[in-house]
Amino acid sequence: MKTLRGKTWFRESITSILAMIIFVVLGGLLYPFAIEGISQVAFPGDANGQQIHLDGKLVGSKLIGQRFATPVLESDGKPKEVEGVVMTVPDPRYFQTRPSATEGGSDNAAASTFSNRGPNSTRTEEADAKNIKAYLDLNMAPTKQPYDPNLTVAKIPVDAVNTSASGLDPEISPANAWIQAYRVAAVRHLARATVDALISKYTSGRGLGFSGEPGVNVLELNLALDRIDS
Image 1 (cartoon, rainbow, N blue to C red):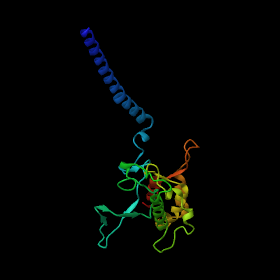
Image 2: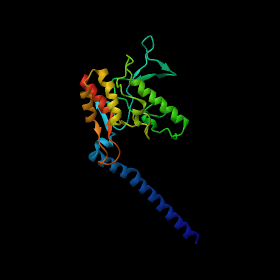
Image 3: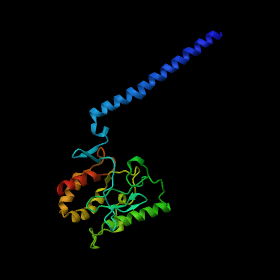
């Protein structure tokens, strides 16, 4: 009886080990490689993260937001640093993405996260007030005249105040883009019609015609602006 039990235990152990190896190979190797192969053939852009290259250099992704900023300079012309981090301000020549609350800095792709603060939180109120002020400040020209003279707090789009769920939203609402167009056109000395045409070109519709909201891809729009100026 002991010998029989020992043989049964041995057979079951071998069977379990073989099953584990088979499923590791199937689920951990063959299946991922098969899906990757199909994706590379059928959807190569999505499979590779919708990367955008310029002159052979990776400049970003259609799926990940990024900052368009310029360094704050000291009186000696050197970039200002605080605790080893270079201080920056939004570059008025470019459209700006929505606020981001990712750890380690805005639009940090290595730390996708949301603020996890409720709508009645004092910290939410403070963050919203800060984002509203930043949006209004960016609308102010060096002459202290607003680029968009009709902009008020009530007219600021929600996506210019609140962060997205991922903190990496690459798109802004058309309403947000139309407001920023005043500044971009003025700073770049372009006709509003030219800037508006680019906004329309890089505005995507609702998914499948009904899901979500139209959005303007900021990276693609800014790259198109640079091509006009080059």
